[in-house]
Length: 214
Image (tube, rainbow, N blue to C red):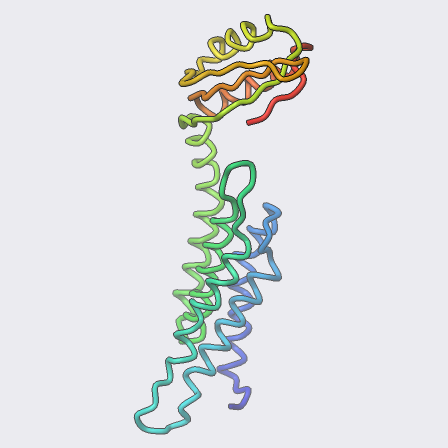
């Protein structure tokens, strides 16, 4: 298994296509950035080369067995960047980028340079352009949140209710009770992300509100 010109070319191209995807991830300050994505594409390319060379001319030898395990290994790596934060699952896009980067590395290892470069460019377009589309849709999508608000005066309950109506948030359920010397209200509310954000900003200006959880 010598370092031939063809192998060297594949490894260099793997670094380049990994950098194309990695720069976009680094620009958005994601967990898997330039170095991580580049290493993934190089590693996938090297495993593919080793897989193709493993049989060394032996008959009835399956030279794809190493390459076939690349998705499994990448799956564990991708799972490491997925986490639950603020009631939402985050890191799925980064994990998908890792998965695609590995596939691009395999394409380079098999000699598919044009395909690898095209896919790398396509990935950047999807990550960059679709991010604006996703934010536009997300800001208008309906989302149900549960608020728990602690306040010091009973009249604050009515002000909070009015704030929900003002920002066109639909109240599905409501509860209120007293906890020691303070009052606690719980609301299950439906509305867009932008409406929720506006409501939270307004409630925080109420001096009677001690704590807001959602």
